[in-house]
Length: 344
Image 1: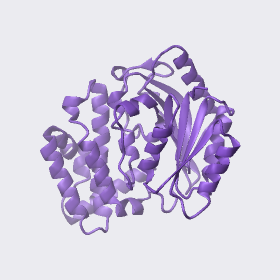
Image 2: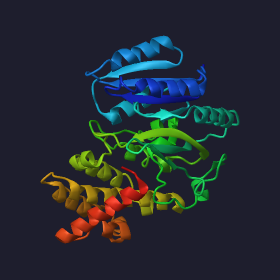
Image 3: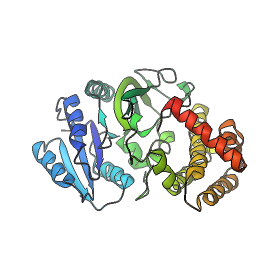
Image 4: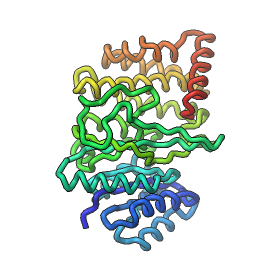
């Protein structure tokens, strides 16, 4: 049977929580034969993730496949899932997250409907929910004010995105052929590759459909998580690498049309540069500030107009205040924003 969607699940020592992720998809899909789940075991060695993956595949051989590989990091697991996918669409679900079952059913129904009508949707967008472990609260990120709901549209119909409404990986489900035809790839052994995944393919998507459903459930706040403040500061070199890859993907003012998409992508990149600036100041790495200065200089040389937008705008100024006192104020502003928006 042709598969309407492939859910790629990158797993690395995920035995403690991968079952919940897989079950949420199966239950939401009602075990439909036109879905596919690819469990990518990214060289797990510390638990029985490989065995669990094989057990799931043996239990539901028409739906689930297990793929084992040497450890390559999250990006390589995402790309392996894409390479193995037979579904018309491709959705990444991290193994420590899960999907709302009713929302899975709604998404599948819309996919089947649009394919039956030959609507050729390139990208489905859905809401995601931050599940905060520290205080057991939820923060829903939706797009009703910015996107038409429940129908196929193009970027020229997109409204204004608020600062907290970035289209993160959790919100996106691409047509598989879009990613393959553009030769999409990700770096190995690198964190934060989801920023590339959520940014670089967007100009290749012409027909979009947004469903106002709270599909993706994303745990946040656990000690050691990649978005934990201390962890991000220690891995600032990888954040800088990801931002540099994004920088070199486009000259936005020349390459990206229509203007609505260009504005969104530039605003996203402004945030990426601000993140690099803040976490370079928080980092204990002795070369962190030197690497930051090189990144800013390279952006200046690569695209002067984009540099001005990132560096001289309000966010760029606030995240790069000079001197010892300026650093303190920059960090204080970041922590105030974190407290209000709860993105960490």
